[in-house]
Length: 95
Length: 490
Image (tube, rainbow over all chains, first blue to last red):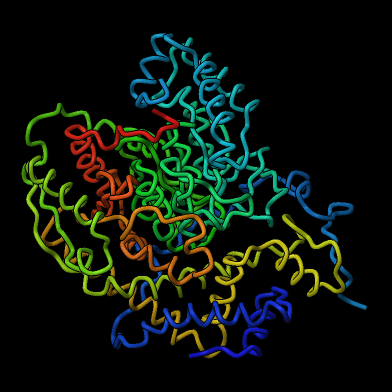
């Protein structure tokens, strides 16, 4: 498998990471090296093997439906890039 | 005093040979003297440390001190510390003063341990050399032209250089064991689920696990014992009673303390790829284990070679999801100039993340994208099952598995920095253990041809931490490899 520059650009858009035209080539080469390593997996027949997502195979715990957290808004928004009146500010998304 | 074990420091504090404030000052002064050359710390919290030390002295005076009260330590900068900069080695979190403590940090604060600062690390714990830190590479205390290993390189270098007696770390693919090996100290990654991940900035959640660094297995046992325990805020935290690992090491030393212990030697770990000096050192250490009464048996981990490709699907997939939270909205870096919201995300992330983190996010995004999930992520999870089954089969024939922690000693700074695949391959012996979720420990076994430390890895079945620590402790009672120090700590 070998990624094209267009594919790398598409992945970068999905990942919301700006990759400039000058970085594209080098990024593609590095990714293709990594996929070369990953491709070794495809030689193995895993028919009938159950995927393993977690070492302990835990079921999700349930807890009583009670309020457990106090309001941390001020503390949490202190580290935000831009807030106003308790809200996070972002560029306008609806015209 | 700088080379004292935790039990020796405990006695010194309890007998008022020195105060916790004096002990903290001693190590803070060592950080001032040696950190400029090693870069093991991102943040040194002198004021916070001295305040914690004063509180520890009060507890000692009141007779309410525990095993770690007044003991200085460092936290890997992946652990959130309330009111203290928590960067995760990234420009993305370069200004992040955490509003809360990680569970591990809370537990150690409650135990009275004195945090001196935050240890340098590969950005978001992605790396094997600590060269991927936005705050500069860490240097190996044994030879400052060599890497300390990663991703917990700062923690390992700080303990090896005796800038701090013990330190926390995290291990997703070897990030405690490999730097412990490269820096000539002991490090343990417990079974997945024993240490809460709450407040431990996530990389690959099904693999990430907190761990402990110390000069010896005994010191690691004391620190790890205070880090484990059920935490309802981590959905993967296990509801098991905590164990007193240190107490389990208390049996008196004897000639053949490991009589009856069966050590499995995976033939795949002793095959090609291991350097000659590492092989000779590991063989000698295995012979020492036999002298202590252990027997050895060859075992096989036939799918071990698939661990690296499977890991480099699973870990990037999980990281691409976990790191989507860094969007420049709620915390962390936001680009100065941007157009619309999508542009703000893309520029903030491009500026805030380093090259290796971006690569892993891109790999993860691809393998999880439409049409590729089965071929990559599911296939990797199936291989993960095969690898875990291999360990279970091998552990039918032995109590512990032993081998080298790494194929070589620490490489030169810069040597693999531009070749991610070569860097990945260096984790060949550690990654499979994370995929299986088993406990692993690395302890010093001797020195390679270049005078750099060699680590021996022990792997046990789930919840065999005591057995791992006890085996290493008995080895360390009979040898002095763990007592060797680099020149700056001699």
